[in-house]
Amino acid sequence: MRKRLERQDVIRRVVRRERIRTQRDLVERLKAFGFVCTQATVSRDITEMGLRKLPEGIYVLAEDLHLQRMMSELVLGAVQSEKLVLVKASPGTAPGVAAALDAAGLEEVLGSIAGDDTVLVIARSDADAAALVDSIDKYRGVS
Image 1 (cartoon, one colour):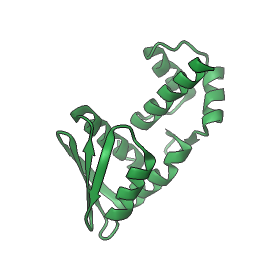
Image 2: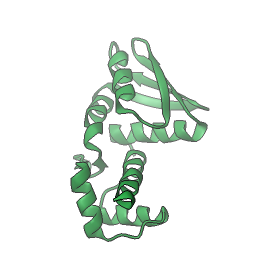
Image 3: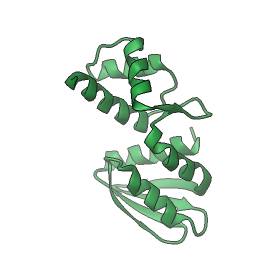
């Protein structure tokens, strides 16, 4: 039970940070974290965790679907400056984008401040800020 929960925590982190397209990709990423498992095990985890595939063929957590919709429809871009991420959004939509980011409970995010069309996100580290920009790009469908 404990190993399954630990594996699912890693799956959650990997799916949020990377573009995972197949169960085989996920099995390979789990191996890099020390989890030796089969595709059948990963398939059960995907079902249990409620992972969904975006139209682009990328896995996303069910709880992140709202965040993905907000990012794909309202966000124009994101740039990093050390621990800070500046998110440009359509006029008038930044407060909703910030609320979606905060509600997602992303471990790399400490908090956010929103204006009319800009969100300033404070990350825990420079690496977390870079991962957040990658996640935002993933949700927006940008390679």
